[in-house]
Length: 482
Ligand code: ZN
Ligand code: CU
Picture 1 (cartoon, rainbow, N blue to C red):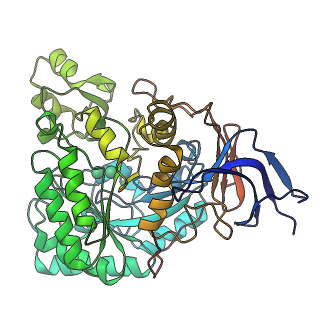
Picture 2 (picture 1 turned 135 degrees about the vertical axis):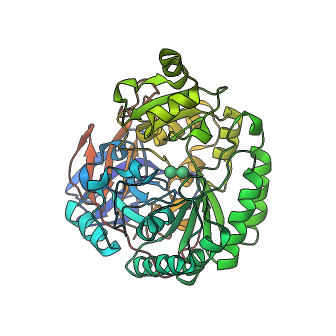
């Protein structure tokens, strides 16, 4: 057998949390075909390890790349971090199935302008992704707010029974067509008025299909623990797997509560499948909304539709220039995007280090001045938190970005480096990798991600995108062992 790629003497970090070891790794077509001492093998191409680590390609479990994978299929922001699969459709917003009567309601505008929403069915979205053939694999959740936008013209009330039924039907069709689950964004103004009675029937359908429920919870501030319980019970009643999105302790009044939140998660995990995702930063980023504004916290404006010239300044400075309050400035700037410095570092570290947490960037690719998590999440975990701060060892860092994620999201034969698995691989130089994307200079490719393979093809090398071989990954019928 002649492999296509042969990695010689690499340190294998296999994604399961097992101790790294040195071996040769061979791929042929789209799979890993051999691991061990492969001396004597002739391959299409040999890549010498030179002290570097070979890992499963990273899975970005929390993205808003729905339309990005089609509009900019190179996906450099993700590929350059070693990411080989993105989960789209988080926080209640998805590109499909959507038929928008007008401008996209907040925060669907994070996915692009109205013209970006041209997928009335999940099949249409699948077709568009396959046609664009992005450099990374894509698995898609269906957003609750997107479903609301199809059937409701005002969002300041619960959906009526007939509207809930229409949403259920749309969700069911999408799941049958291969969507991997449902997401909610219950903290957002346009979904807040959805009571449990509206959400439960949808999550019930998720459970019936053996799919996944992810939630940007109703309250990440004072009501954090209550919101966790709401999420646990909704998923438990439905028999659905659960992922709490970007678990955090938001707002100064909540700092230091990570141990409480994690204890609640641990307890729930004893009786139902549940995890959380998180990004490795103490600032969040989303649309600008009045209820989020708090004069104690630094809020940095990244974009504004009516006042694009005010971007890249703090809300406080803008308010001072205009001689108005921050709330009045917020009203004038909206629709707008912002970065909120609202978490405490020790909470971020506790959540990131917890064995139930997976890494997801929550990067916002349409933002002209994005939060650095868009380009920096995975290198930051490896360089800053693992190598420099030793928050966890390398095997555990990689497990949180690969094996654990593939298990929870049911991505068959991905997220682990073993014979027979898909050849989604990232070659990392742990000595050179650096977290270079910053708040003031966010769009930077990390050094040290030397080569990325997607479905057996070299997708990225020496800082440049090569072959695009990403696929749309449809929902797997059976559970995958974690
Ligand atoms: Zn969110
Ligand atoms: Cu999000």
